[in-house]
Structures are given as structure tokens and as C-alpha cells.
Image (cartoon, rainbow, N blue to C red; front, top):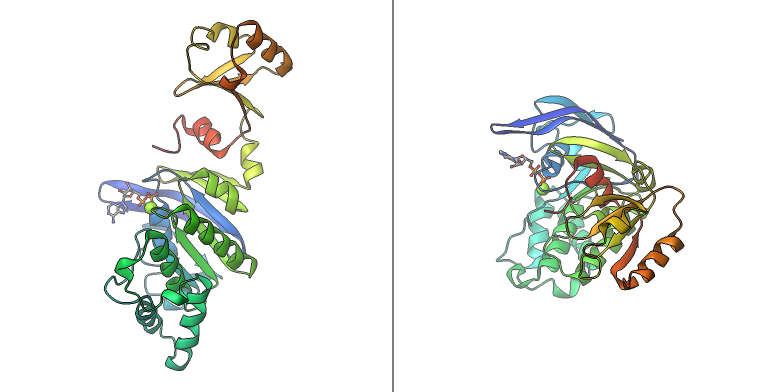
Length: 305
Ligand SMILES: Nc1ncnc2c1ncn2[C@@H]1O[C@H](COP(=O)(O)OP(=O)(O)O)[C@@H](O)[C@H]1O
Ligand SMILES: [Mg+2]
């Protein structure tokens, strides 16, 4: 449904996107996971036609996206990374303004606004001015605004930054519901937990390049191990590195030690060695593979700065 073909976007000082190609299917919940500055927002702005690419093309429903393709824009809603609302007017008036910008007919607008306010649980608060809203409420109102024209595709650009945990869960639930109802969602984040929780497929982006793409389980298979042993750095474990290395390879020692067990190693043997050396089991965690670990494996850096 969305075809991103060899997109390159340069700014004067940086190539923000470098030969990016992606195919996003209808009704997919697609994640774009990458650290700050990776090029996620630039790609969102190209998808909705706010920016033009230097090279490459984007098609939505086989129609080419350009800055003047208003028809494509009707199919897409964008929840921008920085909240875009009028602070000094009420929630309701905000949606009136967005609704008329989208050209929604006056006789429909009331019902459309009421429905969208209800769905983000802000109908009761509709008369309050937005300035006094929490970060989470503003974000929910921004989501409502992006859906007034009932687009087929919703782009969400880091919609949980600056949002309290309760609103965050409400946002997740609502996005999953919209997806179930048939909307195609593209969701950018630098939180791997969000990508794992929400997305059916995702791409990992770094320095403007897609470094891998697939479902979470497909991506995790790229890791050369199935689990790692995480060992807290503390008095008991310091100086025991040689002991740990009998069981595997040390792959990380930044905050804690992380050991990739050698194949055939029995964890029972490892725990016996801990016991013999008076190391508390509390210092040890068995880690399942994560996207964070995959990012580290592929780039040598952590996802979060
Ligand atoms: N309008 C712009 N002018 C110049 N540089 C920009 C502009 N927008 C983004 N950039 C740069 O492009 C890179 C990618 O930015 P962005 O797409 O915002 O990344 P992300 O959303 O993944 O954090 C960054 O280095 C950023 O500074
Ligand atoms: Mg961004």
C-alpha cells in the first residue's frame, strides 16, 4: 500500500535519509525504530508530502506523493512529534479549526468532532483551553485532530514522548484499536519496548539508513545467540570475570557484564559455579533477546543515548 523507493533526502549539513526503501502493507502496524537524529521524522514529513525527496519516490495506493498531491494527503493523518495545537482555545475549538482546514463539511463537523473527542476520552473536557492540558491530554487531542478526515493511514511520530504512563497506555490501546478497525499505522519511536509491543513489522533506522526490517521475531533471529546472562557489577562479581568467561563470551561490560553462553553450556553448571564462589543469584539475570540487543549487535551502539 505504501511504497518507499530509494529515497534520499539531504539537508545542507547532513544526508538525513540515504537510499531508503520500504514496503508497508495495508492494515499493517509498522514501526520505525531508531535513535534521535536517525531520520524518522524526515521520513514522516516525506510520506505526507511536507518535504520533497532529492532522489527516489513514494507511492500511497499507487499514487505518487509530492508536496502538491492533496489527494494523497487526504488519505494520511500525521500526529507530529512536536504537539501542534492552538494553546489558547478550547479542545473543541481546536478540532473545529483542524476540521475546517481539512475541508470537512459544516453539517458533518459537529458529529465528527464529538466522535473523535469521545474516542480519546476528552469529550468531557472539550470546553477547557488546551494550555491547561497535561502532555498526555494534548497528545490525545493531537491524535483526534489527525483523524478528523478519517484517513486510511495514520503516521504517529514518537507520540508518547512527554506523556504520563496512564495516557501512554490509553494511546497504545487506541492505536491498536484503530489498527484492528483497518487503519494502516506507521509508528516511529526510539523505545524498543514500544516497537515490540505494538508493531507487526518494523524497520530499524540509523544515520538515515535502514539497517534491517521484518517482524520482531524475524529480526531477533539475526542475533547470533538466543539468550544472554546478565551479571550485575558489584563487589561479589568484580574480579570473577575469568570464572564467567569459562561459560561464554563477554559481549558487553558497560553497565553490567553480559555473557553470551557457549553452545552446550548448562545453566545448572553456571549456577553451581556461582554458589561455589559465594555469588548471590540476585546478581544474575537471564536475558531474552531484545531489539535493544539487536541494535547494539548491528551498530555497536545502544539505542538510547
Ligand atoms: N529541516 C532541517 N534542516 C536541516 N537539518 C535537518 C532538518 N530536519 C532534520 N534535520 C537533520 O536530519 C537528521 C535527521 O533528523 P530527524 O528526521 O528529525 O531524525 P529523528 O526524527 O529520527 O530524530 C538530523 O541530523 C537532523 O538534525
Ligand atoms: Mg523525530
